[in-house]
Image 1 (tube, rainbow, N blue to C red):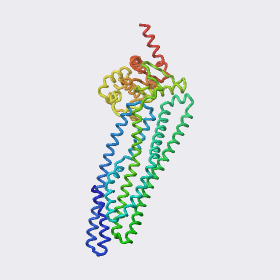
Image 2: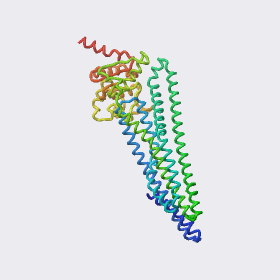
Image 3: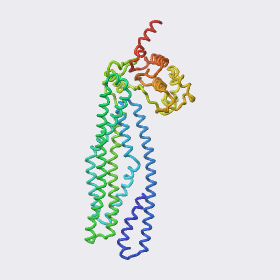
Image 4: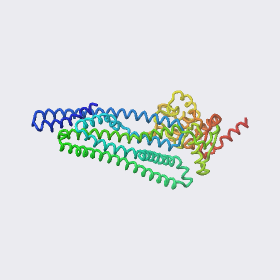
Length: 458
């Protein structure tokens, strides 16, 4: 409010200068008025700085909370990774638009009405010039809003597809090499990158057009006010000072009103993110895949790409069941080893420590100075080897409560003792939930037969 009130100083000063001070040649009054106007502008600048700082902090807190809520929802619901990435990409785009400065236009909109009322009071029909131009721009944007929403959604989908293709290429690189499909995989990735670039170009072009429209409309508003006001001055209905004041007040009020319209238009990106998140977290299975029965299922990747696709289908659509997927090279969360294996929940620590002892993770942890309190994360600075990181991820999965465990090459980078421990835990859990394993390791493929032989021996 203070910023807009102080902004009235300049047009009111011009009104006094042109209509009173210049005709009377009162230098003392001119000095007083311009000094007061200068202090008012300095005060307005300081208040703008305070406002931008406050809005930036509010936007950061709101964006952080929004990201956490969305991430928690995505973790708890099963969807293909590309769907989850689409939500996060749309959310990131909305965060770029929904920054603190983007909300300033909404706060200034009521004062824009006040400025236009003052223009009507001083110049009468002059106020129609900016109102007509704002109305024309608003109608055009209302017609184009559907296209803008589609551009934002297309870019989010394109980015998600590229990121998913990259992660798939890394995760299944060892299988792709044996199946002679490296070339086609990179060709598909290149095609997805072209689609992403095309979608990005379309959205950037649209945003550039919006900026041009706003700048051109602002210039046209000023010209229209001066043009209409000039006729009023020539007819004797308005003074020169009144025209100067109307020009400043009308331009500021109309541009603030136009800014609110533009901000509302760009806010469609936030609505796209909200609709993407809502559709993802409220997802229900297609019904194409029935509930995975409790037991142990091994899928051999050496049998061909169809078997790998079968594993992906089971992971992405488990018929409504919660699935814990452990990829071949799992990523760990930033935190301690204990936090990673217990899902950052204190009540899960006992079960996690028990599983850790069974599969041999405790032996590796005992060699670390800080034990289970060792801080870990991604990157070359991690204190854990590839095998230890794999054991952390497997311990987390085996101590979880999900209906289905999807283990992708779980014996990769593990020594014989760790594999034996893993086999014993899988045998113990196979009757409690569904365990789907993608592996060519014979020690894991013959798990059921080994159990049957042991039972007959007894």
